[in-house]
Amino acid sequence: GKPNWDELLKIIESWQVSTIIIGLPLNMDGTASELGNRAKKFARRLKHQLEEAHRPRPIILADERLTSREAKSLAWEYGLIKSDKEPIDSIASAIM
Image (cartoon, rainbow, N blue to C red):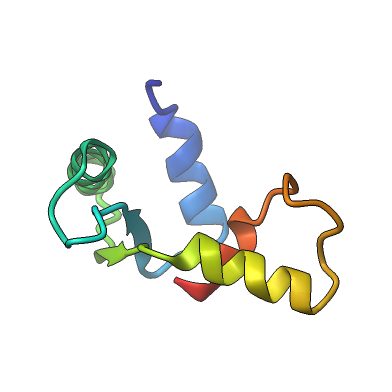
């Protein structure tokens, strides 16, 4: 969908974010994926929004291949999840 840029910029400012890391979904062979192209577009648009607001920040695109698998493995190991269907996005983000 369409991001709420005003709200996102407020969050970035209130949390005093200094660097933004955006997950870059790539195919396992390292080639671009459709979601990866969307992530790149989002990063470009966010950079533009930050510059227009005179609040530039570094934006890093980070390869996120296999972070979900690793997150699920760690979550099971430490008893953080009880079902294979439970969300592990926050753990995957921390790994990234």
